[in-house]
Length: 336
Image (cartoon, rainbow, N blue to C red; front, side, top):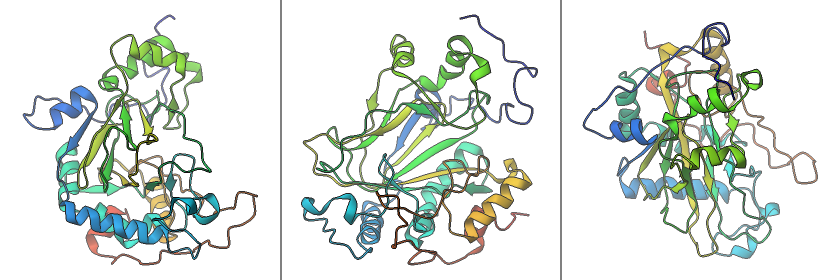
């Protein structure tokens, strides 16, 4: 395919500008994030603290007055679970704004990691999802790989770094993040040389087909399951090809993670901040992005037969304290 140069004529003004580039070597974990597209920061949260957050997440999961028993896999069925996406995430029922979710987002070492990346303490945070993956569910086939990037081909440079606060063991047989190492360095070239720019969309997700995966594999970029322990922080460049890996039949680990992403508050446009404030006040979840692409997730849940879920909640079970720092991270209060 003929390469079409990226110019201001064929990209969308206001969307495509290169926000940021890592310019190491730094002599720390940022070098791995820059070169490999992902990094694991060990013990960002004390293991005991991580276990506390996991227990709060599991308490939330079992709070819906059903027959769900986490010690009895026969009860791990769709009828006993609150609405969950195909990729094992929960973002309805106000869960994105539960106190334990906000407490985890405000862990000092988590904030420090993103402050180090963006060279500022004035951050916004995403209202992202909780993932609880129950292994070997009899009523749900394993999700096939769904490789994707969470940055539009129209954007250039580093616009978003995603994160996972890991609350459970992630070994070779368990559910975990899967990445194509170094793909962050290649995706822009891939889009320019292997895809038709007329098909590019501003939406910040682009799936990679099985045939397109061969392009990356031919360049030595093969899937890798990220190993991690409770308290580790997983970070990846949104241009890195990735997906959520399913547990194998040998796993008995209940994967529990909180997704987080932070970016400089100064990057947010006024209209995005207004959408963010509205989402916060109404307890909506949003996307993986903190400063842009603020799309509130539908809060209402529906049962498998399409009817309204009577378990719907208008607010979290336990609300966080609305501290100044929390409101600044939420985009409700300004840093100035």
